[in-house]
Image 1 (cartoon, rainbow, N blue to C red):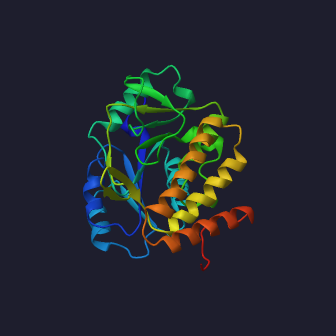
Image 2 (cartoon, helix red, strand yellow):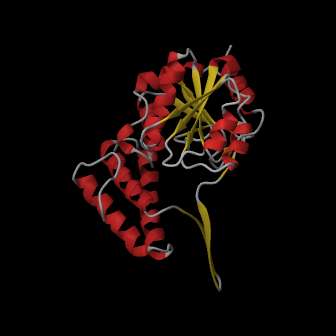
Length: 284
């Protein structure tokens, strides 16, 4: 039987503010161990000190911002070395319902597909089938319970993507290995995906999530790489194609700092064709 004792958690810190403490507090007692992986340029020492008061919290500071994928892989390897079977992966701005792990364990223990489930996640998708549990092609990273046995089988997260589409690529590899992703409808996370912005001109009303201009680079470059390398995964790749078009249109027509965003988009396209992945360290 899968229970809390089988489960570790990780949260990736990146220049996190103190509000992160209240996010982590929502699930810190739901896991047997929690790995804090810090990619910050500036460490929030007050936050870290507060969290280290919990005896089951382990803190690791990367020398540099090594990216989301590297941090996830580091936490997964720590969990495997410590004998855990599952890892809860979290962003630093996500609250979870207090019964998240309990519901995930209950679902896994009842499932006839347990050995083939790579991820059980909170509800990120629109549940159009009106079922308590439903399969999805992909899900976001924060709020995922990943099987570490299957993680090893498919080769983990791709460090070269750094950030953006890391979750898509992992789910593509699950699909290629005939593994499944499930979301649990009643588990509704609270998280901030970026800065909400609004356009309101007469009858024209639009809301969108805004990220920093550098994210244009990773989103476009990594998205093109995924489309090129996983052509046969039609559902996920179709989704990414649509997302790339929307992202370009959003950044060109709706966002501020348009020149910087357009230049990052162009650089992302150039670096994709030039075969460059990893962290972007160049100048525009």
